[in-house]
Amino acid sequence: MKTIFAQSRRNWALYVASAALMLSLLALMRSNTATAYAAPANPDPWKSERQYPPLVFNSKAWLDCSISSTANGRQTMSTMSGQGFTFDAVMLPIQKSKLQLVGQTGMMYKFDSFPTEAVKAHFNGIGDGTITEMKSEVEVAVSRFQQPGGAGTAIHFTATDITTDSAYVEFTGVFVRTSDSKHFPFRVLFGRVEDGSGTVVPMDKAPDTRIMSKAVVLGSPRLPVAVTTALYEAEDDVAKLKTP
Image (cartoon, rainbow, N blue to C red):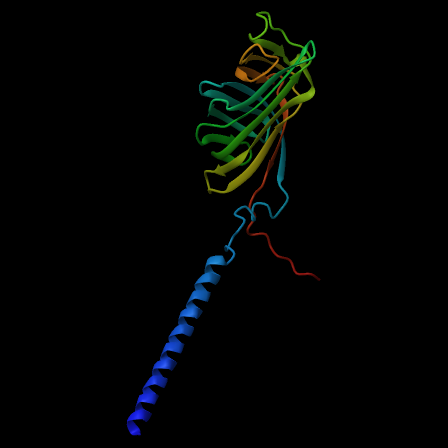
């Protein structure tokens, strides 16, 4: 009888130990699953930069851009007055572009472009830094142009040929200030062009084609273009005020 009772106690102890082990494993599995699916501590890395409205600057600048679909190009922005960017960037070949003849005399072209690497830049009022991310979007429409070589050859135009307010040039990216490594997400937008000229070479003779190459100057040191720049800036030390 004692032997049977002792055996029963051993079986019961083994059962309890097995149950405890199973519960521990289940608890550990639930903990790991919860950790794996927990929301990241900071799901939005730019939250601090976007917590307050952006800084908006007005300036006068001019742009010189020579770029092609077969080789690296160059894009130089020079701010003449006000608060804005000055930089000289090597650009990758154009991958996405469109050139289209409009009616009997008009033409439009557009393309996206990107620097080959990070770009050293200066922003008046903020300081020196590096543009670590950037995309250029360009769309220009002209009401008239010259193409002396005929279809498929170089198209020439001047600032006076550009349809009013139809030279859309936008830069989007991130500027990192050297002095404190602060990040400034930015958007730059060029306004009406009063001086400058351009040459665009189509890929072929078709009236709707792509860009082989282009060399355009928007504005000049004498007549720069109005530019609007919006930057977000982190303001971590803004005082939290008590409600009266």
